[in-house]
Each structure stands twice: as C-alpha cells, then as structure tokens.
Amino acid sequence: MQKLQKDILTLLRRNARVSNQEIADRLNSKVEKVAASIKNMEHQGLILGYAAIVAEEAETDKVRAIIEVQVQPDRDSGFDKLARSLARFPEVYAAHLVSGKYDLRLEVRGNSLQEIASFVSDKLSSQEGVRATATYFLLKKYKEAGLEIGKDDSYERLKIAP
Amino acid sequence: MNDSKSPRKWIAEHIAALPKSGIRDFFELVNSMDDVISLGIGEPDFATPWHIREATIYALKQGYTSYTSNLGDLRLRKEVCKYAAANFALNCDPEQECIITVGVSEGLDLLLRAVLNPGDEVLYHEPCYVSYAPGIRMTHARPVPVQTYEKHDFVLQVEHLEEKVSPRSKVLLLNYPNNPTGAGLTLADKQKLADFVIRHDLLLISDEIYEELNYIPRSPSIASLPGMHERSVVLNGFSKAYAMTGYRIAYALGNAAIIDAMMKIHQYSMLCASSIAQAAALEALRHGASQREQMRQEYEQRRNLIVRRFNQMGLNCFTPRGAFYVFPCISSSGLSSQEFATRLLHEKKVALVPGSAFGACGEGFVRCSYATSMQDIETALQRIGEFIGG
Image (tube, rainbow over all chains, first blue to last red; front, side, top):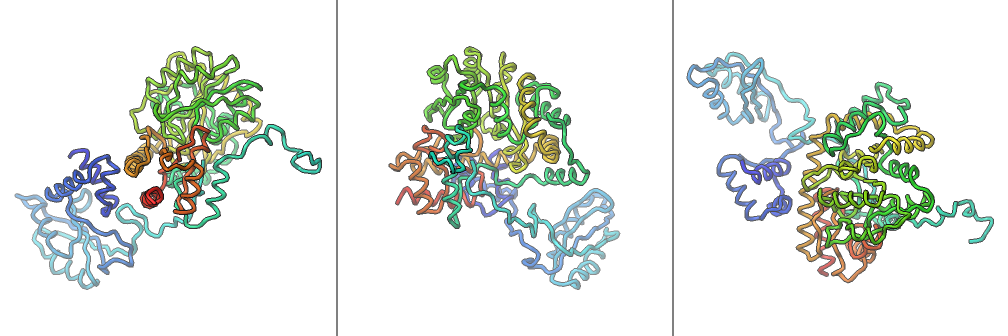
C-alpha cells in the first residue's frame, strides 16, 4: 500500500467524516488526489464501508452477544467454508477465526434474547461441522473503536500560556 | 515612588525593574471573556498518556514519596543518559553529568545563577521564550538579544552574533526548535553556531524542550559536536514530548563541573524534583516512544494544514521545522501585532499571542499554537479569514 493510502486510512479510521479538504491539508496533498485515492480503496475493497460509533443508549440493536464456536474443520476448505456460510446470516455482525480454545468468534446482534437464542439453536448449532458453542451476552459497553465511554473530560486548560 | 510607607519599598530594585510578561496582560484580557477559541496555549492538548498516569498512581501506592538524591533518582538519570545517547548523540555520565530539575524553567534558572557574574553578558536570539531576559536580569547579568529573521527561517546568523559579541560575553543561549517561531536547526546551522561558540570561548546553553517535536530529519545535538561537550549544557524535559506540563519534570545534561554547581543551588533551594514526577518520567522514557511519536505525527499534520491555510488567506507563514507554533506575518493587515491580537479577540473571539511579546523583532507577527483540537483550529482559521477579509 502506498504511503498516501496508509495516511488517509489512519485519518479515516479515526474519523470517517473528516473532509477530503482536511485530509489533503494535513498530508500536504491535493483534494482531487485524496478523493481519487479513497474511491480507489473503495473499489478495491480495502475500505468496506463507514459506520457510526455509538454509545450504549444509541445502539439500534438491543441485544448483542459474543459466541465462541468450536468447529470440525473441513478436509478441503478448512474453516473457510463454514465461516463464510455463518457470516452470511444477517444476525452475525462480525466473524473471526481465532487462536485459542475455540475456532470462530462471532458477534451477533438482534432485537431480543429470543432472536439470538433461536439463531443459536436453529441456525448455528445445526450447521454441519459445528461441534459446540458458548454464548456471552454483552452487558455494558466501556470502550468501542478506541473511544472510551463515559469519560470525564471536564478539566480546562489555561487559555493563554507562554 | 518615594512613599516610605508603601510596601513596594521592600521589593529589590532589580525585581521592581523587571517588566511584566507581555503575555500576562493578554492573559487577563482573554480570561475576562467567554467562549473564546484560543490558539494561545503553549502546552500540548493531549492528556498525559494513560500508562504514565497509571505509573504515577502506582508510585504513590508503593509509597515512592520521599526525597530522592539531589541530582534525582539514579535510575531516571541512567535512563535519561541512555536516551540522550541514542537520540541526540550526547554521551553523558549519569552519575555526574545529569541533574533532574523541576521543569526546564528551573534548570535554566539554576544554570544562569550557577554561571553568571554581575555584568556578564548572555547572547540569545529573539523572538524567544518570554523568560530568558528576565531570568538573565535576575542574576544581575546583562541580556543581549540578537534578532532573527523570517528570511533566514528564524535561524540565528553568525554574522549577527559577531556584531553583538563583546569581551563580557559569556554565554550563548539557544532554543531550537523554537517557541514562538517553530524554527529549527539543520546540522549545518548547528556547526556554524558551534564554531562561533568555540571561537569566542563561550558556554552554550541549549534549551531543547521541543526537540522531540521535530519535522525535519533529526540531527545530533549541537552539544555533541567536536569541542562542544565541555562547554555545553542541554536542557530538556517531559512537558512537551509526553504532554506532562503539570508534572514539572525535566533534566539538564552537561559537563560535571557545571552540573555540580547547579546541584549546589538546587540542593539549597529545591532539594530535589518531585519523586512521583520522577517515577512518571522513568515510565515515559521506558515505554512512551510510540505514543510520543503518534502525538508528533498529529502535530506535524496540523502544522501542514495551518501553514497552508494561513498562506491561502494571504498571511505569509513560514513552515516551522519543529515545536507546535506557527508564526504568521500579519503586517499586510496594516495593524501592529498587539492591535491585531486585541481586535481579533474582541471582534472574532479568537485568542493568539502578539509576536511582540517574544521580543521587539516579533512585531508584525503573531504566535498561533496548534496544540489544540482540529475543530478549534478550523473554527479559529475561519474567523481569522473573516477578520482579514472584512
């Protein structure tokens, strides 16, 4: 990846709403160049999308859970086939293959406990290759996407200092 | 005033004669107003990195709350010397050539008091930090400012030094990267200044508090150049690089005789720097490199943006090599720097510091700090643009 792309990504990852003008000014580049680079990364699939980072009370999905999934890997495709198939369910918000005691880590979201429970029992557990699951409902959010929640920033600096 | 009843009669003459800092009046004015966006703040807008604050709390819990050695905790001095060797090519003995001070301000005060006799002259450049001339005067020595110019990127020129050097000259005081201009020295600049210092048998004081906020390739400290070690003291600290201004923790590196003389004053006046702040500084040096670099990069990008915007609005702005200030020229507005700053404050509620606060040759310029949030920088720049346009 070129340096400009990397620098743009660093800024977008921090604030996806930063203007192309600000990016260009920060990086000593041109607005047109920045716009083209972003478009390019979108086309290449390097940038998948843009989303808001919200506080607990602004979550639109009421219930969220982490599910650990133990998998019997497939002889031909390893974990990929099953993982991709699970990732297709709209309830699955994020899916990762992980090291450690289990294999796949899913984050699932829904509007009620029942919705998630039925996803686990009807769709997930019944998949061929799924050996065991463990579901952890998320109770409270302290930090997301690098941002602390409920942090007290009330300290004020001097207005003029030498 | 000859009123023998006035308590003013108790004030020492040389202190009574000291002018108040130009920043002070402006500070009072800004403080009396609400909703001001300030580009006038000479300290990082980042909170101290959490691992450093956490180490501070741990030091308290462990009861690390006693006096330390006068020179400072040896573990910290060793870490400072290791860091200076790796980053400034400066090799100092932690046992004898390093002292931990309460901010660079204390380090400079100790140093001036340790080396100056009444009547000695100190050469330094203007524009410069507001404390230099008063600090020199408080030792009964004589401040000899030498002007620097935008056409030289605010780098002190040897020919201008030659005009001011005299048999009473004892010290050359430098501050690069510079507050307020953001100027910095290349290796070639450093070599020329070092030659001058050696030629005139001067002591060099190099205030390098902004050294970590450098936007040009790093070069060895001027104190590390051949023939300079025995005639140099470098002052640096943790305030700017690690966003630790309130900790008041810094260090001086130099030859053993001068550090020893500084220590004498320090032991009678301060005893030692805060033990807790020393613990925090140790943590900063051991584990602070990556967040320090992140902050540096953020400042560098803000610098790019703010320089470009000032130039676009027709205020010629030199591209700083370091620190977190820009020093745009406002003479095209037809206003003095004081008028510009005062009217901008009243009409647009944006605070910046008149260049004249940093020496007479700062007239025609203003200092804008970009150690503030991008949102405030954007709003301030927009209002400055309106102010000039209207």
